[in-house]
Amino acid sequence: MKRKWPLISGLVLLAVAAASFALLSPKRLEPVNTASARFEPRQIERGEYLARVGDCTACHTAPGGAAFAGGLVMQTPIGAIYSTNITPDPETGIGDYSFEAFERALRHGIAREGHTLYPAMPYPSYARVSESNLRDLYAYFMRGVAPVRQANRDSDIPWPLSMRWPLSIWRGLFAPKAADFVPRPGQDAVVARGAYLVEGLGHCGACHTPRALTMQEKALTSADGARYLSGSVPLESWVAKSLRGDHRTGIGSWSEAELAQFLRTGRNEHNAVFGSMTGVVEHSLQYLDAGDATAIARYLKTLPANDPGDAPFRYDGQVGHALWQGDDGRRGAAVYIDNCAACHRTDGRGYATVFPALAGSATLNSDDPTSLIHIVLRGGTLPATRHAPSTITMPGFGWRLDDRQIADVVTFIRGSWGNGGHPVAEDAVRKVRRATANAASEDVAAGSGRRLIPPGRNRGADCSICPPERRTCSRNPCRLRNGNR
Image 1 (cartoon, rainbow, N blue to C red):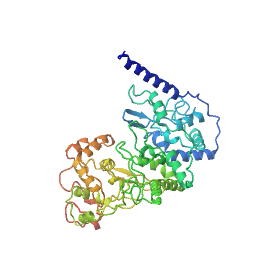
Image 2: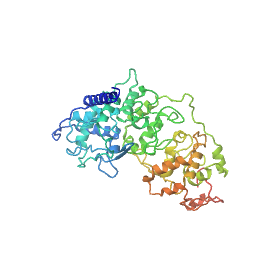
Image 3: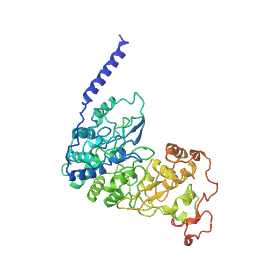
Image 4: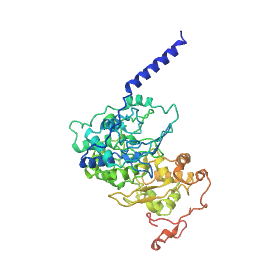
């Protein structure tokens, strides 16, 4: 009899799973002919704006591909998935979706055919989007987007992990009930608008909120507690920072106006956009109207700090003074002088809205140095926007600096000018270099100790880039005074 208990228990569990699947598996919705549907021009225009606020193009447009035609690869712990075609093509896109099918996909995470979408689609956030906004979006995607005939690509997730039915259970456990956003009683109208955009259409928590082992966000709104928008673990070797009120690791030192400026331009007195957030600014946030940018900023500024002992950054000029005097004896100081100080200056304060300050940067003071290592290795581009039409590129240094040198300079930056970041080990650089190897054509052997440049303190500094009036140094390598060659 004892031997039968495991079998009986297994059958019971299987029956429960099957019953749950049956309850959570919705019906297939029939395709409809949308060719005769009529929409007001103003509705299509509003839908275009909302699609930009929701940054639909970021996931549904592959590099070099047609807008919204899908095919963008997204890496997951169990294999790659590919975004779908959401153009109004009736055969390969969503051209045969009724509004009911469209609403069900966005707010409930269920495709017209009846299967549950991967939660890479942020339907737990979209569950709060109002029906009126959904109708505007539907109008835009049916009439404002060009149809593209491009078949969707199957995921690379191996069987049996590729089976969709467990996603129905995940949806039932973790997705909220779809309902129009309702402001809190007495909530300021501007803050409420910001909450709607951040918690709903903007789906900021999809990146900036930590996730559990079962991949759901640990908090979906500010009402869910302090983990909401408290920062994430590395994804594609970038860390989405905290958007809460902490000074050291969040945006506590940013004013409302500075935050709104960053949203629309990707830059302000404190920082410049980099990594995955670059595309969000380029394709979405720069198109925010001034009122919505202010609303988002005002709402984010209502989120308190998680560290009760957190204090504003206090600048310390000792390191800058030492570099000014030619003292590069600290670990990483010489590497910083040769590679970084021309733009970020010996005092670490950079040039506002052009080359970001390193002193006091939340990215540098974070416990996780992955983003900083990544940008030193691969560089990045600050995109031109409608409100800041200049493109500024930082080169990557992975081709010329080995893992030890990058660990040294990152440690130097994280511990200078009043910054309080922990030292960085060579192994941490090695891991990021390997993880991002496909992003550059450099030989990964550069990180294994093989020099790609001749040895010597100058490390390839090109004095010819200095204007004649700046060529006053008498030592090799050149010494940068206040970051000016």
